[in-house]
Length: 253
Image 1: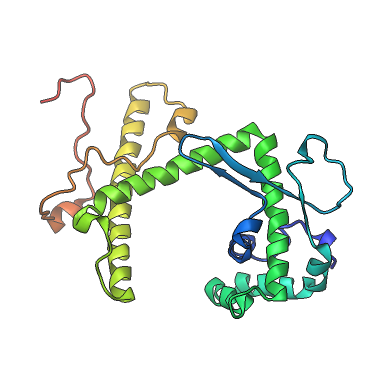
Image 2: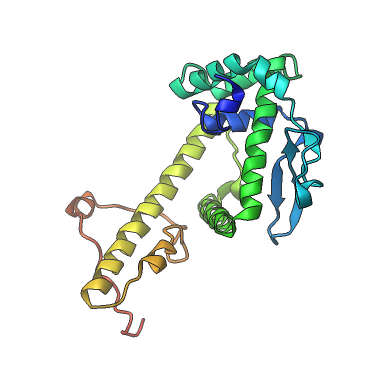
């Protein structure tokens, strides 16, 4: 199969990990096909690539100033497919593959081919981002969700100034594992009560719209006391019953 017969990021067995590896193999000054947006939404850099040097892309000519080495991709195409297959089947880890592709600190020929292929995929995503407003909104929504998760993690991980203090990797993994467990417990708690709230609103005839439900996040933590000691009764946990829901019309004490 020729490279032209496969859509970048789709025909290969594990596109996400392969794109990640291709990005890590790129040199900083050649990080093309990337769009970076800061917290204020200001565009920092937008650079794409082109396959044909003489092609006329109209207003995008200035954007696609860099040329893709298709010969390098074609030369290593069979190896690229084997790499993707190894990632998809779990035969090799991405970290191990990255170490091999980098050689003694500089990307090997196969590593450079992975990077070239990754630039094509990144440029396709960049073009979709520029052309499709709905796609941009989806990305912004996902970024907001990710930041909400980070905000919850920072609130939970308040001890030791939010720093990993364990000396060994195993200890650090234990800390991160405990953090993930607490976050998952909070998300489960919030989701359970949000679901109960929505069901009660529906039973009372309230117009619950699906568009509004999609905007409900289980990552809020303002109502959770993250300080102090906690005691749990197994009998209460085994009952599986939720606390009585608050009546929004009744005054709070």
